[in-house]
Length: 250
Image 1 (cartoon, rainbow, N blue to C red):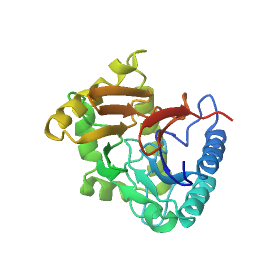
Image 2: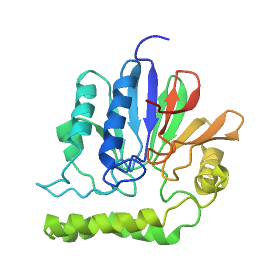
Image 3: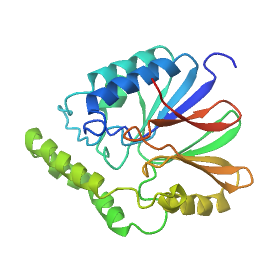
Image 4: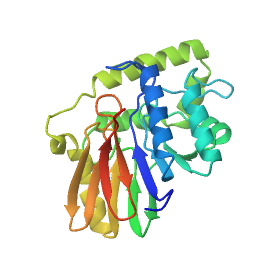
């Protein structure tokens, strides 16, 4: 294996909320993970819900995360591209991370070819059948007029409101089953439907459902859920010919 030949994927850090580990401890752990993978990383994909809440005003962003931002910028400056996806908890990202940190921002699903294999990468929220209530709410939250109206609120009030909304959303988003296939069923259904019209897609890489899984949906086609860094500390590794899930340990 030559240096800088692997592609890494991770999602659902949910920084800003404490769990078994505090947000700060998880942030420091993520930085140690980034240091570890920088040895052979060619590219890194952060696939949504990196923050538990985020609203970016024109001249104000949520405080904190300096350590993570510094590390991301350091890796980018060293020549490792970092792709950053919006999740359902950090929808309202605009120019700051792309302009000041240097990440490549993706506002929706992204299709790309890596080492000859076709990838469909998305956070996973709102995909597949059902979940109508969330899809309606997402439509409202991503409406530019609604965002402009919300931005009129003072940041102290607006960010506090976002924090409460995010907390409520996370509490309502517990695993629906101990069976990872049942938990991921919405996205699996979406991938099968997408594959019917895009048969050359080899890997569907997503987050959102927090339950790590590699599930075949065709002879050479797979749905992958990256898990999270709240309970599992899991991530995906593409080595040029195969995709694996790994679990960070100190």
